[in-house]
Image (cartoon, rainbow, N blue to C red; front, side, top):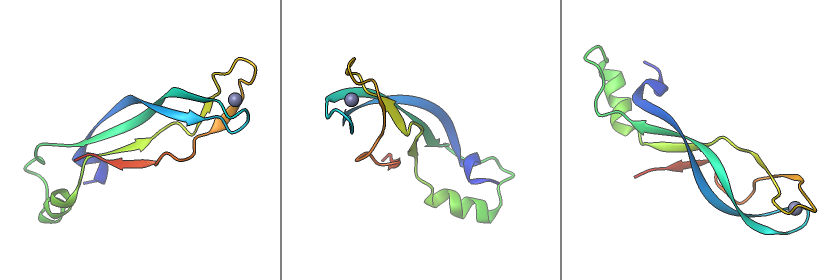
Length: 91
Ligand SMILES: [Zn+2]
């Protein structure tokens, strides 16, 4: 089994406050994340090794967006998202 077989995938949006690297304006942006939620159980075809890996697996989010477009109409530049993690674990 692949690691991705342990999870149900769904894309979600979360708000984050970011500073534009060009004009410095602070604003909130909707950032897209891929949410991988651990399944309740594995199918009966899972091997012992799969079950061990599955036991350690944790639900998590991976950030999809790398850049956002500045909301300042006089700027509108695309800037890289910094200060926001690329992977976040869900408890
Ligand atoms: Zn800007």
